Length: 314
Length: 314
Image: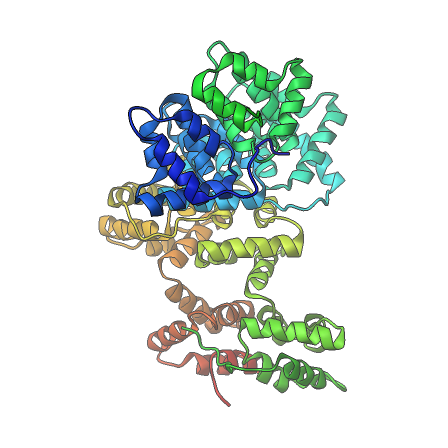
């Protein structure tokens, strides 16, 4: 369930005008930006962009980039784009940055539903004039490339049917891949990038039954290179996205020097999806509310936006 | 351009009833089947299926399978399914048959537009409850698997922009792959399965300028294994599908014992697309009309359907 609070009715024109007013004079009125954009769903935000463009002949996204800065600017930028477009940007940044973040690629490719992933691939075309898999492939090599290209190109079957025998066979293959038996990585890539999520979860369950430890725990102990790390992320996101995101934001906050990119990604991409469950699990797991933990480790308008997206009411 | 002749208006109910009548008694009236189905476009054929199901509580496709046989039955079956569904069947048969036909996979995956390929992947889900890439991967291995899975999973950028410098670099990489230099096959797979068709054609052109011979000709001489053969097919289909199909049907007819599967595939999949150009090129290249060549090498109702789809009027 979502955490975002938004009005059933809003006037895109009035919102556009209020934002324009907030940009007047020296420095923007960030509180107004948060009060408006932090309380609008994806469709409403796109309506505001359109109204703003029509009334002021100016691109609202560009204007916001000019007016805001730092983590707050980045979070607003991720938030105001269409969700699929925003994910296209996340993919692109993850693979093109000097410090490549293969885990973000594995995460997004597996957390999205097969249909959502197609929409993101289309958004990637529109934004970058290249294919998503094209950029992933051009910046990686070897087994890591095979895995990431396989994951972002997949259009998995979305049904619930499972084949228990296949789960057994393929649990073995995944085990061999972790043990780095020759030839097993190709097979593990095939399994992870083509099987349905239901089938994969059956395979992971079978793995735990056979080996007495979850495949995720096993990978946590054994993952020594980028390939196995991305593999681990994909397994976790397919198995239990809520658990994955709870741990991601927990680690991002706990670190000396908060990992704002990860925090922003969790809040912005999940606020309209399942942030409520992530928040509940966080509370249960850490005996402190996520809002409280975030309020302690972040500050200013960035903190204001995060807490608003988490559903905090003034 | 298409060769199919079909009426602007037709009554799906009247068609369904005429077909039902054609099934009465011993043996079906195949002429009526051809006269109706051979003159209806994809949308109209689906309307007939729906009307037939509604009126007679019977699946028209099953009934046709029961009534017809041999090459004629197979051609009618390929023709009456929705085009995307029919291609899903072609993919499935090509990879699951004892005699795997990797060229058919490479052909379909590259001839289809990026958007058409997505529709076929969706049809594959519906029909087989598995992903297209899942079945391709499960029945292949090594570089051949990487290539075929890459091709069927691709969602290429569809724009016309090209990067001439990239074309130059990648023409070299493709050359190395043909020469079987170590590591070059992975790179060739990356290029062939992720670059836009416009970019690939620029790369193939550059190849010819550098090496004084087309990459297709080069591959024809050097292709010694399944990987290079599928590679060759993909290159030809991206470069010039009309030329590819003309040669495919020419060879299928010329063979001792016509290759009916190939003939059917060309006629059925292209009759509503570009069979007119294929026909023209065939005539120019062989100094004999395609209809004439086919009439000589096929017979009965199968021949009747092929010629009808080629636009022959009684």
